[in-house]
Length: 212
Image (tube, rainbow, N blue to C red; front, side):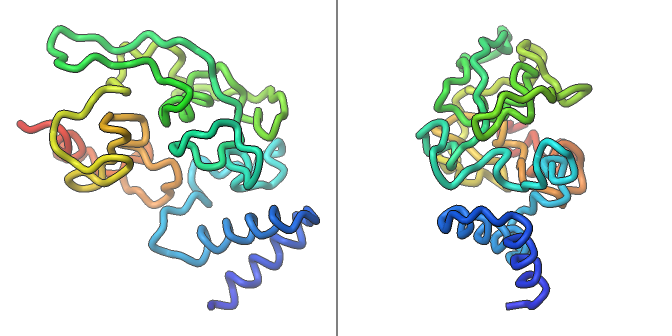
C-alpha cells in the first residue's frame, strides 16, 4: 500500500478521534475508498466536498452518510445521514410523454438529491442537527420541476436495472430515470459541467436513452 495514503488515514484518525471503534473503522474505510482506489469516483475536490466549510466540521462523508442509525432503510440510500425533504413537487408534463413522472417518494434516490437542491432543507441538517445554511444560486432547483428533465419516469429502452449501467454510463434505478441517472454526485473528474456521467457534447448524453 502506498505510504502517502496511509499517512493521510493516520492523520485523519488523529484529527477525528471518535473513540467509537465502529465509527473509526468507517472513517478509515472512507479514506481507503476515496484516496487509495483511483478507479473510483472521487468526492474529495468535487462540489460535494464540504470539508473547507465550517459547518461540516471538516467531515467528508458524514454530511450524507453515517455508519449507524441511518435515516431511511431503502437500499438506494446507503447509510443515509441527512434530513429528507417532505416537499411536493410540480412535475414535468408534456403531450408527447408516453410515461407519467411520479412524485419522488421517501424511498426514491432522487429525493435524496432534492433534500438539498430543492432549497427546503439546509445543507448542514445532518446527524440530527437543525441546519441554517441553505443552497442558493443556480444549484437551487426549488420545488417546481416542470422545466427540468422528468425524473421518476420509467425507462422504456432496454438497459440494466437497479443502478446498472446503460449504453455508456447512464444508470437506471428500479426501471426509472432519476437524478443520479445522469449525475454522479461523487465525481470530481468530469470534463463537462454538472457532474455528468456522460458528456453533452454532440448530444452524447441524450443518445444514451433517446434513439434518434
